Image (cartoon, rainbow over all chains, first blue to last red; front, side):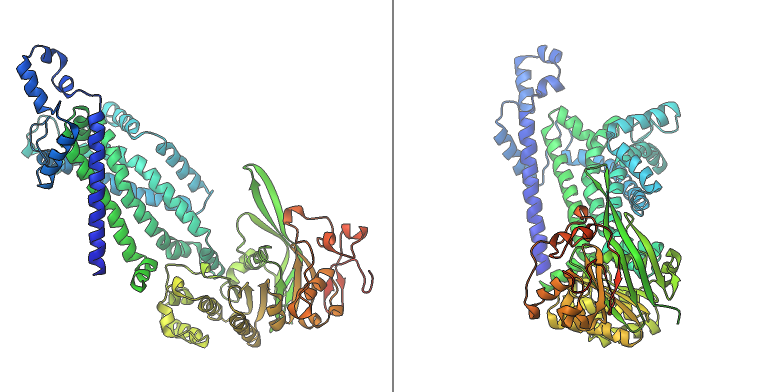
Length: 329
Length: 310
């Protein structure tokens, strides 16, 4: 009963969030100064067209229809499960997203795991002894990468590993000129290394800095002091008290970083011409492909929300203070 | 006999702080403190709350924070207590009973913490027996610290000490937040430890409770030890020698409840010489210089005034 109520609340919150996000995106798009006709058809082409053709194009891109009417039309279809047809790709939005989602998720999971584990490890190394050599090195590295934009790192990696060293491909998710069914797993991984690395590099610093801060606080806590007074070794303190007490915040952070990785993927995919959701979002935004952008927005918001909810659930399951507290209350 | 169980001589603890970024300030939290504890004896160090007297416990245990440094001599069973010896002894012969629930790992069950990671039948039985002796049933072992009441927390913390067969117990503020009955019971537990042959150093701000259980008392004023005497000296004002100790006496509910004007100076604004000088009715120009210790019939006092002088 208690659980059913909680799940209901979460679903309601998600619905409200999605509604708010879609409205916001729609308003922003309708305020956008981009004229879909000039952008997608081109000034010259438009000039050579007859008035009738231009009218048809205007109707296709929804120019002239009030924004509210367009939004309601989109929302009605969406609630029926129809995400519409992408105006640029001329294919169902669901299909475009499905394809790109696969590419992106693949990339993001790697980046997510990489930044999570590396960040956690570096954070522990630094936080064990605040002000130590390891701490200064890790913090320095983190501040450096945290203040560097992801797309710039992506370009630097591209220059070093793809252009100069020629170890890795310069872009795309699969080799050029290969039939789709000939693309193997190896090819995909080969193409994914650089974007995943670029995406995780900045993520590492945020996870590492947060983990360091938490661990340093734990190591300076009263209970660690008491553990020392009881003759526990520093190693045992780290394992028995430290890791346990930073596991929870680290987990929350890890799930919360889903949104950061999603955000970063937009730029990184653009740099590597990687055909993922992020790149599609840029294309859709610049080309006023409303149905596609709305679809991507909804999916992204749902995934990020899912990440945060997962953190909430795990927290409740693992932390005795929350678990027992809930039972009592 | 090889001297006192614990002998602290001329202990000064300095705290380094950074003010407004770059200016380094040294705060003399404890100055020239001397105290001895013998086997079977309970000695109380009395100081006001927030005066840094916990650092005395931390200095003896060798767990001072990185920005604090200690000077002076600490001997344990007659031998200098080096960092290496502290490391070897702490948690075994030398135990600390900390003050609050924050000294327990919030994510570890009580039983696990009392056993301190040791496994096996022997330790499980010992843990059950010790908790049981303080009226805590076996169900306590599976509780987390946040589920303990204030009194239970205190008894759990004491249990961690008793698990070890300690020779010297340092109790850091074991009573705040407890109602008088519970506080008395807690101090009773420490008394039991002295009966078992251990020495107890009690660090507290609660003069009344200390006098009820401790054999001897060292009074701190703004980080300076002003007098050491036995607990019975507090029966009459005349047997106390330092003006501050006398003021404490007069402030006790049964002796008039009279408080002196003013407050203890902050360590940064200490006057030279006797720190009590600005508030002392008997202060004279000689109080501004160094004040030596003077033996009394019950201990010592740090005051230039001889008995009867005013």
